[in-house]
Amino acid sequence: MQININMIQEKDKSYDIYIDELKTLSFDTKVAIITNPTVSKYHLDKVLSLIKADELHVITISDGEEYKNLETIEYILNECFKLRLDRKSILVALGGGVIGDMTGFAASIFQRGIGFVQIPTTLLAQVDASVGGKTGVNSKYGKNLIGSFWQPLAVHCDTKFLETLPKREFGAGVAEIIKMAVTFDKDFFEWLERHDLNQKDDLKSAILKSIQTKACVVSKDEREAGIRAVLNYGHTFAHVVENETKYKSYLHGEAVSIGMVMANELAIRLGILSNQEALRVKYLLQRYDLPIDYEIKSAQDFYEHFFLDKKSNKNKITFVLPKHIGGYEMRDDIEKELIIGVLRDFE
Image 1 (cartoon, rainbow, N blue to C red):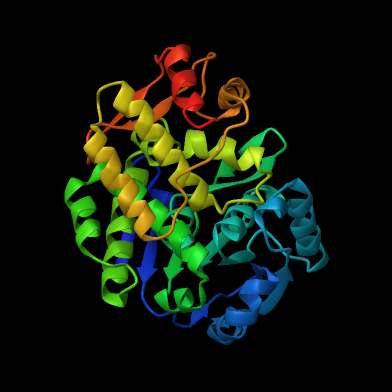
Image 2: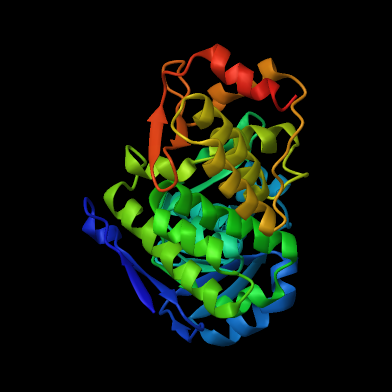
């Protein structure tokens, strides 16, 4: 199956997302695959057999969110120079969201920008991280604060890669699927309540629907000037959780799960989400063993971290909140006392 991301404002950035078994990919240039040891063990041989190129190389980086930094980017770039890649060369991201984000960022700055292709191997990457051209790395101040918008040449989603996923990684991807349903599609959310994503056919349907949703949003708003920001539901809270735990305690999707629960509490206090609706979201997250609790050490410190979020502007924090199930509100006018009150519930 093929989905096109038609970039409305910049047609030359349009590309296709393929949801199917990975086929032979041919390139008339040098290609370097960026991956990590965990992914290599399961999938590298298969991908190497399917890529045809003038030269084919592999650059292996350490596995884990804690390595998503400028030091790793410098390593990737230095390896590209050693391999004598040029402006027509292509990088291939083989891995999850961390690999995709870093490969895209490296491609965007190597010799002022070269092409890259996404081959996502985790559920989270297939439904979210690989689609839309957000690239970047973390800093000590927060998540993904250094990066660029750089669209891939193509995205190839092979669901067979998901057969080797650990349970936690699978759940982390489900969190992103739920995120999109809560804010954009009530019918899809109700479908998720009735179906089991551990079943192959249901999972394929959910992946397709999630990619279609994100593709539609990104096509309208590449640089997150409007509707694309809604995809950050739960993320304003989640990024603080990840930063506080130094990216070692939670997978990104797990932090997003916690962030959605926190955002829902804020929405309840604003009167735009009912307690019953919030419980439905919480129950759906729990079905996939996703965390819904987090112990905040200091509500005030947690609050101050919000201002390092990319969505903050002019000392105002923008929150994406569910307006009932299937709708959303973006708010930057919420009083500090109300926000602190929600955070104290988690102390």
